[in-house]
Amino acid sequence: MSAIKCIGILTSGGDAPGMNAAVRAVTRTAIYNGMTVKGIYRGYKGLITGEIEEFKTQNVSNIIQRGGTILKTARCMEFKTPEGRQQAYENLRKENIDALVTIGGDGTLSGARIFAQEFNVPVVGLPGTIDNDLFGTDVTIGYDTALNTIMECVDKIRDTASSHERLFFIEVMGRDAGFLALNGALASGAEAAIIPEISMEKDQLSEMIEQGLRKSKNSSIVLVAESEVTGGAIGVAERVKKEYPHFDVRVTILGHLQRGGSPSAQDRIMATRMGAAAIDALMEDQRNVMIGIQSEQIVYVPFSKAIRNEKPINRDLLNVLRTTSI
Ligand code: ADP
Image (cartoon, rainbow, N blue to C red):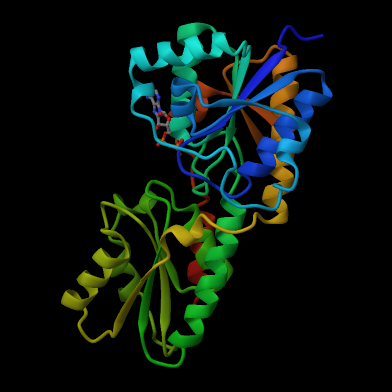
């Protein structure tokens, strides 16, 4: 029997569909194994303010299909300070929480890592972000749902795009990672994707236009990852208006609708597996690891690796996109 008797669980940073499935799986697997579970609201903020409630199995009933997170989420600046983390630790002690499961992105895992080191608390992280930008796991919770949402939106835009002769730039999320833009483009049959991984290497816009965009088509759709370097869809469209004024350009920013909606089957299943694995990991005395999935297998990825390493995009997909969009 593990020394861990009480688990605290929180969701933090940007919300992602499937987080609820993970909360449900963590809660029920812990209870199944004889542990107590405490839900911590609003991420690290709730840990500092003590917004904590015991979760029974029925607290997580009827949530697997819901988007967002029932635990709420927040960005919490105090947790970046030693005083804030001290306060968080005191609340953990007061609530008799022995270990934490944190669900979120890069920032959430960075916070978890520092906290675990400072106070010697076992922490296991789950990758929850629609951007899919965490190293060590093939996919993150929320990515598949967001990708499907993008595909459906682009399908709809295509109906109107093909009724006119236009060049559409559709901005999707992923400030540092082009997974949504590139795979969204492949899934929706878009003509090209402009992604952050490439933007320092070459001018993707001029290359795309020089390669003969719209030669055989009435209208074209290009997915653009939000980016400070390219200026996102608006930045790219402004450049086209100046440099290639013969194009009739339109911009759509998909924005927060990409985060919403009921999670896909894949996200629910993956979040459930990862949630269960988080409790298994704690019972095996693992700590400071992120649960990942690689080639369908659960893996434990040290926080240091998950945070520090860049997850590479599969560059073969760029060629596939180029070839199939002629
Ligand atoms: P995400 O987890 O989606 O990447 P953020 O980057 O906003 O989202 O991080 C979520 C929260 O994690 C932050 O609001 C903060 O409370 C905590 N956090 C992020 N980075 C650190 C850090 N270096 N030290 C301590 N806490 C951090």
